Amino acid sequence: MRTYALTVFKQTGEKLLDETFTAENDEEAKKVGSARLKDEGYSDHTHRCVSPEAKLLLFHR
Image 1 (cartoon, rainbow, N blue to C red):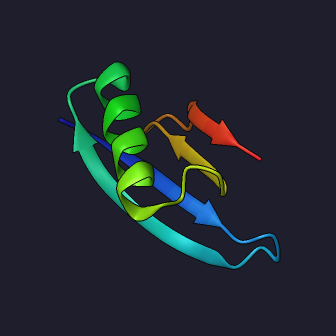
Image 2: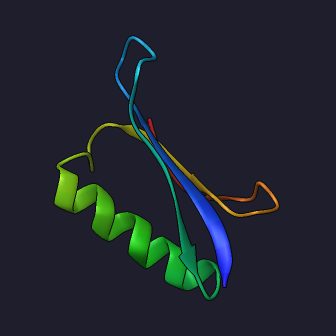
């Protein structure tokens, strides 16, 4: 399993969500990250999900 980071920001730069989760690969991580954003109601907020190598998997500004 690999560890990914998911972060959501307010327009002011304040973090609304800053957590890590595990997934088997980047594709699974995109699905997990997207589901978490939807569950928390943060899909339209500025967010990013990055891989252990700092590869940007999800981004919305």
